[in-house]
Image (cartoon, rainbow, N blue to C red):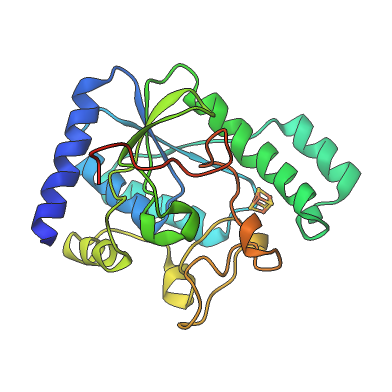
Amino acid sequence: MFEQKLNTLRDALENISSRFIAPIFATSLSIEDMVITDQIFRHELSIKQYSIDTERLPGDTHLLNKKIEEHYGQIIHFVRGDQLQILAFIQQHGVDAMYTSVDLRKRCCALRKIEPLKKLLAGKDAWVTGLRRGQSESREWLAEEAFDSSYGIVKFNPLAAWSEDDVWCYLRMFNVPYNRLYDQGYRSIGCAPCTRPVLPSEHLRAGRWWWESAQAQECGLHLSADGRIQRITQGKQ
Ligand code: SF4
């Protein structure tokens, strides 16, 4: 079963690599995204890898980037949001405005994550992610392939059907580097002020924006224009 998932993943990534001219993988350096990074480097696929430096990332996430360079001999390029706009936002609302209201938290995410992602995706023809259906209720209808109307690009989620155990199985099998915060109780890692470790009894994303209601807890990177994660396309289950 797991071997079948591995073969399906490799076929999907090879297909994207050969079918598109400018495919991109935007990684958050999560454990899921490290599976895809490993596949891309391992099989020398022509899918460019980038990450977004929100300038609020935990030190361990930057440390992982160094480990990736040592492990693969290749780097993941980082992009940042507009420095002037971020500075203006901080001057007006404070550096930790995300705790003040959901609106300010979303504006912080928009400046530090969504705007740089839009720039990254401009001119690209396919977008690969490491999203899984099991990560949250809002992702349970995630498609393996769907057109993302928010960004106007075909989006591939080749790990949609993977479980968290599948991901760990892969990382151990191929000795893939990962963020050491996962060994300290974190199960989903974003920016330092917006991420905390979770108890074994808690949902894996309970440590993200934990002070907000469950409905608000997406940063907006993966919401389609109607505000929902894309539904499974017909025949893609
Ligand atoms: S996750 Fe937190 S710090 Fe990071 S961009 Fe969003 S609100 Fe800002």
